[in-house]
Length: 640
Image (cartoon, rainbow, N blue to C red; front, side, top):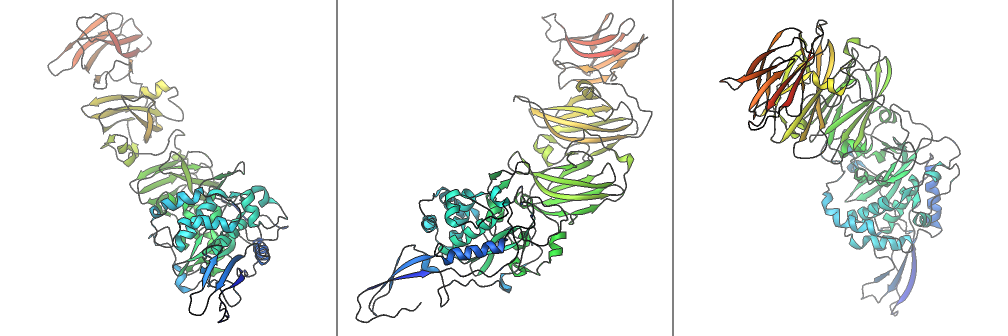
């Protein structure tokens, strides 16, 4: 603004009110809130709408509640005018002749190419480490009086428009709570800045309006954008019409418009209790427009900041990757459609990630009917729905914490069920060895594939183990073995130098899960599940008995060559051959006792009669100076 100056005047005080630009008219209604992530369900009727809320914000500003005061001292012509500013950054607002800020509308140079080019999650190059000091400061700033003073305090550590926007974003995301009750009221009033600061609660249009106002005080161009969102209550394939259900912001930085959503950046709504929890989400700060469009559809296509822009129908039909998909380093998923039709009763999903990641899935709320295998940079999932019809498939990923987060949801349409594919209910995830099993100390497996087919009901699986790692294995089928003891008795574990060998005998034909657990020997606690194999046998003649029961003194380095069956025939002489380490004597005890002798190859050999007994034990004497024998193996004898 040009000021008339009297050449004879020494100083003249003037009071200027800098008004914000009137927002353009809009249409649509209510607000939303992300929950894991999500937004409040759409409500029809009875609401003035998000655009009407923006009009209310405009009236608040016109009444002076959102104005910025400047005191101007005018000096002689040969002196530079000085602005004695109540709020130091207000002069940075560039206004029109009426003093109103006029944000430039987005144009071609603001648009990013669609689809996402994987270059960055952000719409401008950012090193988040540069914000560490600023973030820590901004999150601790408290409200002392009004909005202007709050912004002034926030900007003490901000030295660029980007840092000013970041400080405001961090403060709102860490201090403003989503007001669930107010969002559900039919005739709610607009959230005034003073009310938001007092209650520290608001809804999405309140978040967006507050963010816009704070940016304007800071001298940064910002607009509120209404539109549709895939938030709380969103269902895959849902259509959008009528009222808009959300609002967010666009900010002008370094000659270009950028998008952000402080509502979804601040926290989550619990889907069962509708309670808000602060949980900061970096993803929605200056999000790349090609990613932002997945769950935000603006009323004006120009605010997509995309070329080419997407249609509402495309928005409805496009795959929705939740923010955690990208937060946890995933790059793509296939199929790229939210609805999948099975082929011959099977659906296959693959995910590509930029680093090794742990995954799990749920089909209709259960971790069943699928084979999930981990890959170095992603995963592969084969799902076999148990019935025809529509099924809900959720995929979860685990980051640096112990919590799995939902990253994708699919709807499966199944018109055929292959009854021969039924998988054991106890087949947990993942299947097959991977980078994770290697990380847990299991190396160079003999069977790299997750599925093992056996024609005679027997197989032998081996792998290397790191020093100090103990391995435990168990066998699980839908119709047996049942008890924890029998689940282990169909597996006999041998330790050969630095490799573990698992001999497996199936009790009958079918499909079984061979589970592998590990723990560090010197550390307390339970064994940890690592992975499992799927064992398949179609030979109906298979009927293998259990292996002999082993006791605590059966050392990991021991080897059992014969007999491998835990059930011995009655009234027979049975040969024994074992490699036992660190023992002075060994014997077999039935009705009578038979000693075992050590041969030149280091094996203990001998035989015993099963006549007149129901059980046979292998016993060892560990110290020649003692006469106390320990049980190491137990066999049952068939009934007469």
